[in-house]
Structure formats: C-alpha cells, structure tokens
Amino acid sequence: MVSPSSLLVLVVCSSLIFFVTEAQRPALVKGLSWSFYESSCPQLESIIRKRLEKQIKDDVGQAAGLLRLHFHDCFVLGCDSSVLLDGSAGGPSEQTAIPNLTLRKKSFKIIDDLRKRIHAECGQVVSCSDITAIAARDSVVLTGGPNYDVPLGRRDGLNFATEQATIDNLVAPFANTTTVLARLAVKGLDATDAVALSGAHTIGISHCTSFTDRLYPNQDPTMDNTLANNLKVSCPTADSNNTVNMDVRSPNVFDNKYYVDLMNRQGLFTSDQDLFTDERTRDIVTSFGKDQKLFFDKFVIGMIKMGQLNVLTGGQGEIRKRCDRRNKDKKVDIATVVEDLEETFSALF
Ligand code: HEM
Image 1 (cartoon, rainbow, N blue to C red):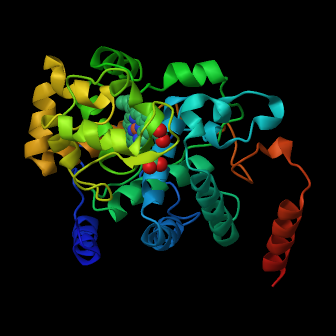
Image 2 (image 1 turned 180 degrees about the vertical axis):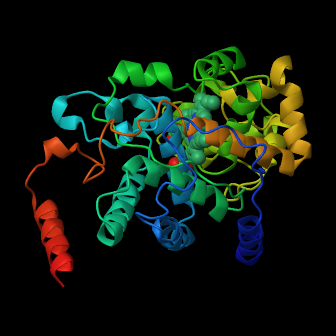
C-alpha cells in the first residue's frame, strides 16, 4: 500500500517533469493550439488544477472517473462533449448506452462545476470539451502519472450519438486483442497506443458484470488462480452489482503496475489480459512493465492523439453555456436563473 505522503512526493515530482519532449509529441490537429487561452483565459489551467487537487484528495476515485469520461467523449463523435449532453429527454442516446451507464455521475458534476468557475472568471470562452481534456490530464498527474501539455481550442458539439453508435465506437471488456486493435486502428491509433492507453486501468474500479464471464460458469484459464478466487468472493454471482479495484497492486496510483499485473495473469478484463497473450502486443506489455518511463512517454503520446480525435474547431460547434445542454436547448430552471443573476451581478460590480 502506498502511503499518502509517498503519493504526494510522487505527484510533486511528476508535476515537475514533462515526460514527452516537444520534438516527440504528436502534431497538432488544425485549429488546436498549445496556448489557445493564453490571452482569453490565462488562469484556466490553474483553476482546474486547484479544484481537482481538492476533489481528488477527498476522493481519489474521481480521478479515474474523469479520465474515463474523456476517453468515452473522444471515441464517440470525437472530443466534443457529446457524452455530457443530457439526451434523456430525446429518448435512448449516448448517455444511456450501456458502456456509459457506469460513468460516474459525479464526473459530470465536476466538469460542470469547473465550467461554472471558469466562465465566472473568463466569460463563456472555454469549451466543456477542453475542460474535460484538461481534467483528464490533471487526474493522471494528481495520482502520480506523467504531466503533459494539452492541445486546446476544441469546440462543443451540437449532437449526441445513438446508443448503437456509442456501442460500436467504444470497446467491450470481452473484446480480444484483434478487436481492440481494429477498433483503435479506425481512430488512427496503433498497437503501442492501444497498449499504452489501456494502461489507464492502473487506476479505478470495475463492476463485476464487466468480467464475471471470465469466472462463471468456467474460469478463464488465462486468469491467475488466486485472483480468480478473490474475485469470486467479491463477485459471488455473475450478475453481482459489486465493484472491485482494477489494478491489484496499486489501485489508486497511476504507475506501470497494470502491466506487471498482466505479466502475472492478473488482468481484469479479457481486453486487458489478452494484450499479454497475443504475440502482437506481448512485448509492448513487457516493455512497459519493466520501464515505467517508457510507459509514461507512450501514454502521453496516446492521450494527445486520442484528445485530438475529430475535434470541432474555429467556427464549428459552439461554446456551451452549460455542459449538459446545447445553447439552443436552454431550459429555464432555477439553477440557470441563479447562474444568470450571478453573472449579471459580477459584471455590474
Ligand atoms: C481498450 C479498450 C478499453 C476497454 C475494453 C475498457 C473497458 C472498461 C470497463 C468495462 C471499465 C469498468 C466499467 C465498470 O464496470 O464500472 C473501465 C474502467 C475504466 N477505464 Fe477503460 N476501457 C478501455 C480503454 C480505456 C482507455 C483508453 C481509458 C483512458 C485513457 C480508460 C480508462 C478507464 C478508467 C480510468 C476506468 C475506471 C473508471 C472508474 O473508476 O470510474 N479505459 N474500462
């Protein structure tokens, strides 16, 4: 178990070190920039970092929730905050698709709370998509992972995906490496990106139903026996509602132990463990398990690539006033009225 003080040292050290040099980092997509808010909202990143420092200190699990939220945003319609749109009024949609049902409700609240603070300081100039991307980066840093610059300038989308499109674009935990590689290749992500990004499972939790197919009715022979026995206690039935930590060695620290787990047949999902079984990805897993710096470098590259998928820029999309609805959907409710009044008062005084 890592003590809070050693985690703090890790965090401080990693905050000082940027893992990927400018020469190594992926090219910027047209319309994004490393310094997009330099004049319009120079305090943007410090507002987010300061707030998340507190929230992740109070509940480290929120870091995992925010990191996963950015992934689910980017893989479906691009990093445009489509996943944040409350589409429930319009029937089944992106938020109600099965993979998104296990996104943490609190993650959505944290993003909109950040949006509120940022818009109060800078005006309605920063997109929810950029806030989500920075929050994901900070979640990595604040749990001990690598620091990196986030390309900025994304605009928020005007549409959300159907349930089927959401399922088709994300990856199921039951997928093998062939499927994982194929799903990521469509997005321009290669095998190294696939293995590195899967390393996000070094933090966070999973519901039993995401992996009990590996326990019941028969135990997956690629799963370590001790892990299987422990998981059977945590998940006594295939449809148990319980949750477990994903990384058995250091569930709250962003490190390379996920790969050590895989090398010991202690990966949770088929999609994780098969990366070590499959010859195309096995050596990549081993190299990350042996060399944390290498993993961090490749993870940063993967995140910067993922964070630029199908982004809206320039005059496309909009800057949402609230992250959960399009500007034209503006509903008159107490929260919006209070916020509008607060804005008017702060503009006056
Ligand atoms: C490669 C394919 C991937 C599959 C099949 C997959 C699948 C899953 C599943 C099934 C869960 C648990 C959901 C639950 O039952 O509660 C999960 C959790 C998580 N995933 Fe992935 N994932 C993948 C890639 C990624 C990527 C690329 C990232 C981020 C870069 C990511 C970050 C996370 C995090 C941080 C959690 C924990 C969330 C929490 O504790 O709230 N995953 N993933």
